[in-house]
Length: 266
Length: 339
Ligand SMILES: Nc1ncnc2c1ncn2[C@@H]1O[C@H](COP(=O)(O)OP(=O)(O)OP(=O)(O)O)[C@@H](O)[C@H]1O
Ligand SMILES: [Mg+2]
Image (cartoon, rainbow over the protein chains, first blue to last red):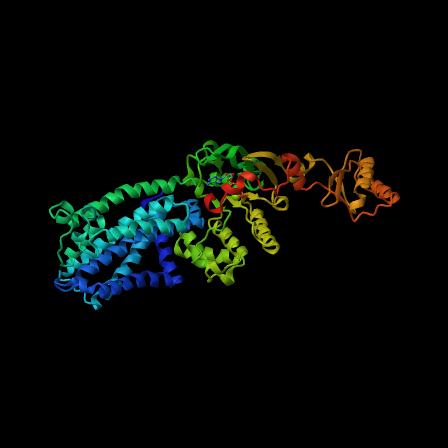
């Protein structure tokens, strides 16, 4: 009974609200870009020496890793933003409006994705300044960034679900941080997986962060292998594997979240 | 023609039938068969202490929550079968102001206008109108964060009026406001009511219900324990009463005098040194009492003829004062958990 056009418009109003927040409180935008930029600089100059023997230096390996880590944290941002809206009663108000029931959650994931566009752009430029040189075609590079955005977007839906089931916003911040942080380090993002204990190597090999990092590296023109069994599917086909992960995540968490949002009876 | 027939007076805009709602897998019984009806264009106040079930009722009637059992009809629409349709005729202002604090008042109202599917121009026009109506025009461009509690509350109410709802739910609209803020809010609500909206208002303040509502439903432990106009409820507790405050040493003697005058034992509040007794013959009893007290050389510090307050109503209906916080709501009803 609520038309598709209205559903899209409703979601867009919610997305615009988030963009408006960035204008009204620019600190949010500034901090969400400063942090990854600081990471780029720290890793580039603290671990820069690790790159002995890598063509173009450690920064070629590092940048895709930091890109992925940053978009992975979208999960936390989404979850926290939603939990805060719930705490403030804003979600209740939205739920009392005659809008599509998917609008609020879709709007938020889109808003967080748009923020990622800005963040990735700033990081890319910073990377370029400190020596990152993607060696693939412009199309590959564009596809690389698009894939990163989609990866962040799919994780946003886990964030939505966690935000919806959470009791309060601060708990959400802690839980999501404690999930994402190890995931990004138990991967090939910052160091070679071959030096990890065997069990962790298997974990790292199937970790979506690893496949996404390897896929991004490939797309930016830098091939690297990872994991315990170099012949496994994720390490052989990181790009398709990444898309499979994204598809699975959205297939599970979008319906779960929309259901939860509609039924929420707290 | 038939529009002139006073059929409006009989149309029920809000009907709740036997609402039952449990929280936490049945551990907490928030509503225990609550029923109420509100006629179109009138104001019903749900009056009850903390934890009585007021917010739960409002959340069910405004489609935010599904009851375990029972029925709810809003403006003729079944709220359980067709919640989406109900949402397009109601306005809701919850117990805590729910607006985007980082945005300005203007931003918020335009956003909500857009969500009610007004065009951008319409939404902006409506925002301007509402900001003026709620005396917020000068602060329209300030983030809500910088608003006082009263301003927030008014903005929240404005946001619930964007589409001129037929049925309006206000959950404790003046809780946390100072007396001036409360007066302002009452003014705003009264003018809304004069425009013909049907209003369900919850409150813990007896004077608020008295002031704003046509009818009052007293809620306790998830059910309506009494319903009627303010006068009807007061009459249930009995007619007029005399209240006397005397010096500590005079309490006992005054009680005797009062018993003689009114024929029944006076109720005594030793802390306040206040004695109260029914005055079946009205002011005649009062005169009598004054004469007797004078003869006994008792000098009352205060002496008054009172119609029963809603406080008295509550006390006589539940056996405890309205302000008393129920023990079981202390821990369970943490603010965060209520949303
Ligand atoms: N989300 C929840 N989880 C568990 N119990 C709840 C929840 N919400 C309300 N309750 C319980 O249900 C009962 C009714 O709560 P409700 O919020 O409807 O009361 P109220 O009349 O609005 O009180 P107040 O005046 O404090 O706002 C209370 O005992 C409360 O503790
Ligand atoms: Mg309440």
